[in-house]
Length: 120
Length: 107
Image 1 (cartoon, rainbow over the protein chains, first blue to last red):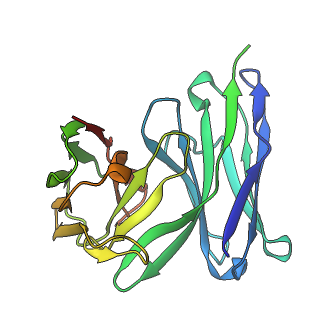
Image 2 (image 1 turned 180 degrees about the horizontal axis):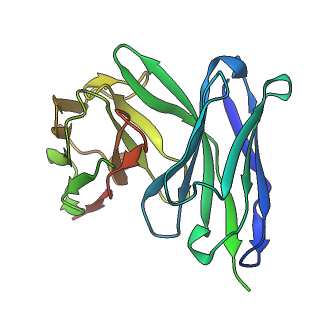
């Protein structure tokens, strides 16, 4: 059974840093792209980052230069280092598995999310 | 960046109704569109990818169509467990983007 379990969320002051983790199990972690997606309370979904199987990364402008995604295949783990945090970064952060099959791509498995609150 | 506009943003319907949600992309995305269902307090769940391909285990009352810039998600006969928020997502180019969501509530 595929499982993704996030951890590391919490309360942090503006300008502070936080590192999220996502523990993966039930599949060959190294063979999949992995993503972070966030959702502010009562708001929609916002894609945050991707790390490909070769370690290539992409970010939207809202977090580029502040957030860093990484992976440790030997530990089946995904990370998100978040620096220079702002109130607008407050959200539930989900990790998700990316897959491309049959002519399309999607996020087929998601974790339960971890809450990050940026406040003084 | 590719913008996805979902409509309606809110929909009130009854059990048994046929429901259609649209998603329009600001530029062509071929068939690189996925649909997700999200219930309160839960992670999104993949319903459809490649615009019209069912994810395993998704009931056949859900269907997707479209390509290029215009897409639809249809629920042929709304069931009580279908009351949720639905999101489209484009995976054609970075940054990946989601539509604003459509909340389906009980009439």
